Image 1 (cartoon, helix red, strand yellow):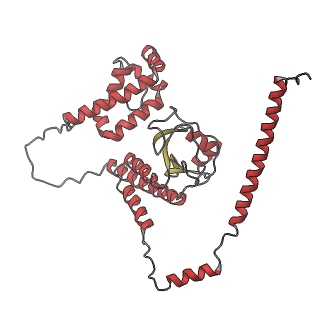
Image 2 (spheres, rainbow, N blue to C red):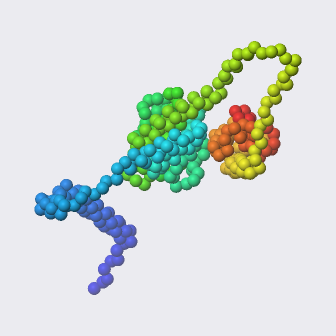
Image 3 (spheres, rainbow, N blue to C red):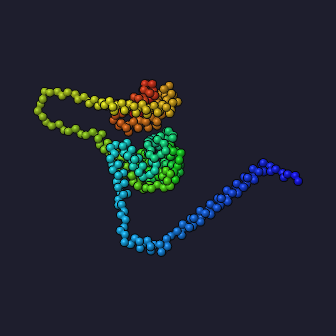
Length: 345
């Protein structure tokens, strides 16, 4: 008797593929049946009267367990204290982001400038720096929110994808975007999401914090305007004639920084400017050759300067120009004309 014919290898592979497909289909069907049975059983998962009677009898003489009162109020009070302690607009933005980190797994703040949203800072994400540089061009639904159509965005879509893409490749299942407004104009966007969790715990509380921050922002701006407003000079009072001629009043010289503060400011400026040169060498080289560094790297320079000002204050930079001088020295070969039309130069 002759040996049976060997199975043709291509036929063998095709047969194995059919068997695997059939097994996968059956496994999926079985899994769906198990899940359906489990879901149906949950609907009947209730304690019977006998068990309830035993529970009532066992607890009838026991004192009720104390329930901590006011925990939610205390937490909210702490975040309100955090916001109310802000001494400047930049300080308020930092405190708002800290407050948001208590309400959501991940949070980020974007500054709106010239129609673009630039990442300012973030909390809870998997990296300390954004994955992508540059500003975000708002899609239509985000543009509508910026211009006052609606109070927030609570559905995932182009707006969330555009903002989250500047920070992380992972999109959460639940999110919210709120505008921070000043004089009915959106000046920043606050993004929060649930991270690895399914839902945001306190989206309405987060919205309330943004509204409070908007009111505090207006108060800080009003105080700053009041300080800058010139006060009328007092009317001269009649006095006895005098032969004395008053000396001309010289403007007070700018206060010098102490050595430790100046060293720290110069160190931070070198790091920030060095990062720009490290990550954008082609644009820096083009600016050195043809000028207009600010036009080529506006977003990056503004973000770096904002970090410097947040650490040492706007007054320090205005009086001593540490960040500006470092930028011109490191990126423009010491030629200020190559910086271009920077508003703070």
